[in-house]
Structures are given as C-alpha cells and as structure tokens.
Length: 184
Image 1 (tube, rainbow, N blue to C red):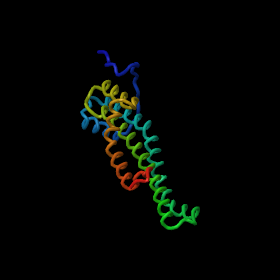
Image 2: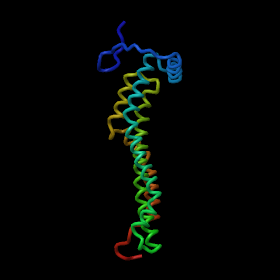
Image 3: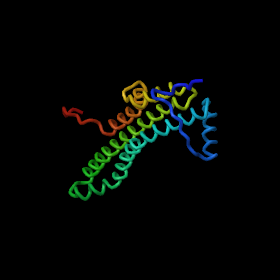
Image 4: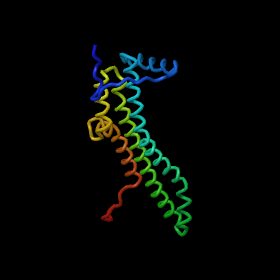
C-alpha cells in the first residue's frame, strides 16, 4: 500500500528517542485533538513548534520595546526637570504630560503590533490543531503565516481596530488638536 503524500517533497523516516512521558503527552494531545495517528500528531506539533520559534522573537521584541519605553517614561519628569529647570509649574506639567503621552502612545502601538503578530501566530497554528487532513492544515497554516495582507491578517487587524479607535478617541479628548483659526 502506498503512503499518502504529505507535501511537495518526498517523505523520509525520522527515528528519534523520546521518553515515555513525552510519548504520553503526544498521545494525550493526539486524542484531545482527534488526530488520526501518532505520526500525524508529531508532524503537526513540529510544525507548530517551528511556526512558534519563527514568530516569537518578533512578538517578544515588539512587546519589549513598548515595555522598555514605558519603564523609561517613569524617569521622564525628573529628566525634564533637570533640562528645563526654568519652566514654571504649569509649563512643566504640560511638557511632562506631552512627553509621557508620546511614550505611552508609542508603547501602546508597539505592544498592539506585537499582539497582532501573536494573533497571526495563533491563526497560523489553529488549522494544525483541528481534525482536518494534514496537507490541508499545512496549506492553510502556510497561507496565514506568509500572507500578511491576506484575509486572516486583515481579520486580525479589523479585530484590533476598535482598540486603536478607543485609544485614539481617548487621546483626542485628553489632547484636543490645536485650533489653528484661534476660534474657541
């Protein structure tokens, strides 16, 4: 009996040694996700691991940049006070508010971009976690993870858009645009 084709390339056997506990965890995952065979379960888990290993550095970097900027923002009032010691209290507080707003806005958007990447990873992993033929799951997962302008990515951006809108509306209320005509 011929083996089913699993992709564009020829299949090869891979012999590995793993513990009984690891086999049990693979089998538990396999049964919970209704995957037809242990080999199929291992293929799917390897695929999930590779997608995750590829995506996590960017996700972590984006979130780390946002969080680092927030951490540095804590010292911003003191830095402003040192470099702008001649400001009166009202100007000082306006400058602090403005610079903190910039840091928070940048950090929020950077973290939201990291969250978007995380959702893209989850969407790419999703097809591998359900009981569909491996080849179909692999193709669907690949199309989601590669095509950043595809339907899945657009859906993720649309899901996050209300959060961006709420943030922007909140900021506009706190910091209304200057009236260039001088009208009130």
